[in-house]
Length: 101
Image (cartoon, rainbow, N blue to C red; front, side, top):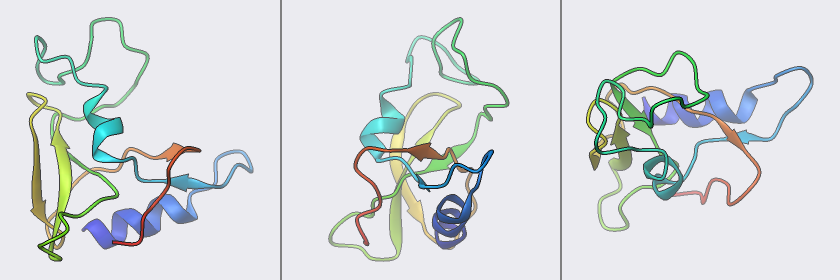
């Protein structure tokens, strides 16, 4: 769930490095190459184990509290899904951080 994803990122510790978070929807969408699919990432990208599913972002639409923004890496579409649904987590460090919504 989205809540589990937030918690997972917040508690992540990699080689003693803490401070992980979910990315903004803009950060996730910036990785997409719409000419590619399954996953929709540029050729030669440096990432491993990227799934062609939905990845949670840190943000929720302002007017609907039970939804959160996500990016579908099967085709690169951006949308939103119910926070109680399942999704993948792409943890990042630094930058904007979780906004509390």
